[in-house]
Length: 157
Image 1 (tube, rainbow, N blue to C red):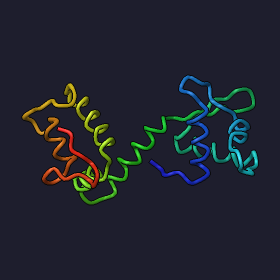
Image 2 (image 1 turned 90 degrees about the vertical axis):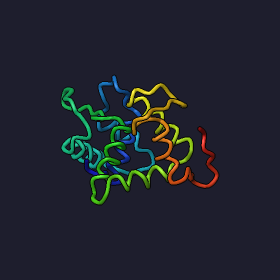
Image 3 (image 1 turned 60 degrees about the horizontal axis):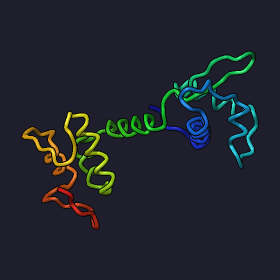
């Protein structure tokens, strides 16, 4: 997935914030108006939206003489893809994941535990399993060596 430039990101933020999933999208003029504080020409916004369409970031549909634009994917899906792309940059995916897991806050670790638990079909906190996908194994991976957590984080077992 292509990383976004500053202006592309600002335009995508407008689309993600303004266009609900069921919307028909917004016009170039509506995007330009929503970019408060930026002195951008209509044609500049139109060019950015055209490029984003070419990159597959936005979908567009003709409405009369104008186009209506909407995000091709959610902000969360975009961020998740960026994270996956970063893992593919080289080196060890496992080492990068372990380093990431050790850097998250306690709350973020709980979110990861819940997501991984639901993927594995586990029922929630306190669920144990003998397989490597069990909650205890996941807790060990998130806690790091000897149950060590970042400073100020208490283990909840």
